[in-house]
Image (cartoon, each protein chain N blue to C red):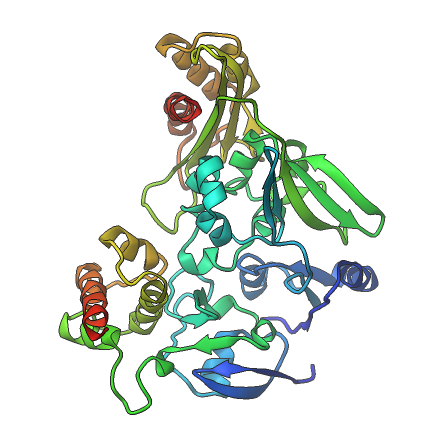
Length: 288
Length: 160
């Protein structure tokens, strides 16, 4: 493992100014479950590792007037054990319960998972589907971005050098909204997904007509993506089996699945078609 | 690179270690304190052989930066039995139920199981399996391990 100095700033401004001083030689670390592994495997070799664990006010879960704020340093385990998340945002439980192990979830942060920006990031797909905005702070001040636009390629985000994620904000959802996520894997634990499918559906007062539909897909493109053609098929319709099937087919067509060691493109497309339908059914059940 | 000092509670005792800033908790435990019960399997947080408990939570010590331990309380397998040598119910149960074969995963298994039972004294089989999902055993097939943890939960209940 390369030698590095480990710095533990206690304020955001101190962390940013340390990063400014060391530039490319510096690397922020949150829970470290990705950064430490990358260092050990020699994929990165920073001279200065700057810990974000001692910054105050980044580990909040606040649900107020329908809006949910999740601090970037919230661990996956904190989300998993939060009664509010379990009751109001079960789609996030679908995702975080199946990430890594208890040991990893106790340490790994939601902000770290997003910044790491692997196509298989399990927390990204539900958050995009929930319409999350991400707030960051850097040398030039604060800014907010739609999480959907945040990923620009495998391992690449809009985040610029020295910027730190502050929180995710999920705006109030319409009434009668339900959402669900499916992580498709070969085994139950310690797996990266073959693909991930999230569906959010809002229903009209008749509990049948879809007023809002969002579909998020993971692993089947270089970044997490929305299946907007499939969403358009659902919106405004009374959802029945036929419409669900068409939405599934549209999502399978618009995804950019490739062959990889974890699954073939044709299989991934077939599973996208299937799980868009299944997750839509779970989402509608949760909406009612 | 200069050594720095880090102070924390280790198995109930306040300790200070002189470490390099790039060390992990596991390296410090094994090489500085010579507590070799915690094992290095994969070294990247996949196998759980290095599991220890920090402030009540099971973590992988092989990817835990040592300087993050400052001021915290760490429990390793060496701190699980009583000072007089009486084994913890989990240790007894693993011995009695053949929860140990080669033994390499055992310390990590027991630490994960201890973190579970400390929070949830009456877990279901599913909860037990979820708690050790990050602890790989290549010998037992997990059946005896799950039985050992169930048995330990029973012993702890009877002690009370």
